[in-house]
Length: 296
Ligand code: SF4
Image (cartoon, rainbow, N blue to C red; front, top):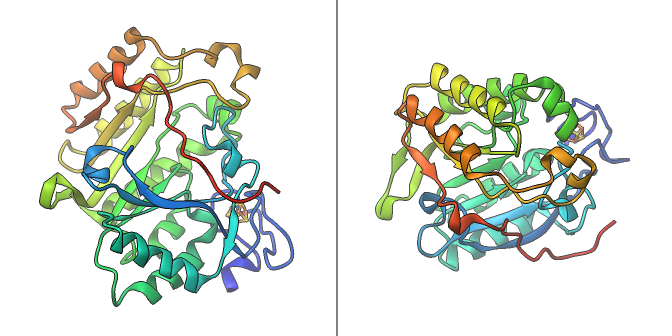
């Protein structure tokens, strides 16, 4: 596919010819996934009762030192599937009762995913969720207009220094904030269907990191100043657990405190956002599913 010859799908714009090599994200032009199944650990409006039909894609455009999915994002665990097989996976998840198709970290494979969705379209009638790190190009978001119903982006940092230090992307906020504004333009206000499931809209996730509550407050302030309370949903996530290479940064090598969590929740309340916050007690451990395939 044309887009893989000199890849500029994400803000890295590394220009790799993915038909011959891999890009910064570690991916060639072959679709690689590490798990496809019903997933019940998203927000209730995404998971519902039966679960979200989640497909985890291998590789990542970010380098978060605390990544809980590092086996697939950084160590490239997974297996290859063809476009037709991916379409079959989407339909199988729907047949299994999935409330939606949840594409996790899909950015490096978007052209192939669109082809798979085109193939599945005649039978696929559940919403498509794009579950991403927020580090996206506006052009790539635009290319998904008509394909994605629900956007589930992270907005991790405000400060370029922090995003560089912990996720290897100095331009994270600049890219993610512009991408989220485009997502909202395309999806419009949140729309809920049967059983309180989100069928259209944008749900922005923010994972609190220890010692970074003031940066979190700036993230919330940005959302509050650029969106009215009924235009987006926000989910303040408290389940940070130091994993992978978090130990290289002692200041983030602990769970967040109740004080830090309440501090950020109060900021969100100031802007009156409708959204989700997680009970501290029930979110003590990060949930990591079993991934399939080999590391490379
Ligand atoms: S998606 Fe991968 S190959 Fe494409 S620009 Fe981003 S890092 Fe490079």
